[in-house]
Length: 191
Image (cartoon, rainbow, N blue to C red; front, side, top):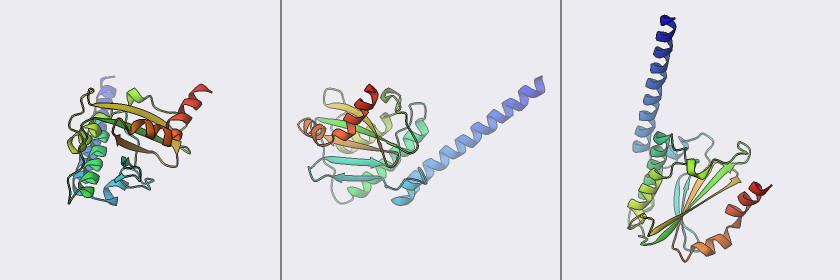
């Protein structure tokens, strides 16, 4: 009996060691690789790279080529935060990024329709690491008195997360322009 417990303990330690090595490799890759290489290392199926852009409406949009992880997966969220940080650095090499005193952060969680039919509860998704990167780059402060958050989920072609940084005045217009981001999820829940 004791021999079986030792084997189980050794196996668990080996798995933990392998996981730690994989995490360190991801962190190293996030720090060393730029552009398409680091973005596609999140998932071989990721077709979009991490990007930062202003839309034609003048709204700031950031795209991650993966879903934000569940809260228990802090290492993956730090890796995605690294991708986001690198994309912001690439976009703003020559200029300073805009700073928002007040804002609404919209987290648009996009689920690959071919792979997932279930949405993860928003309160189970890890936002902190990415939000810390956003605060450092774009926000005066992310205190709740200056920064509101809105989350929505819907199906799309690939797993991804789009983060919108809007002024409070822009948010109602965003809701009107992108009802497919939030309305369909509500309708699915009512069925």
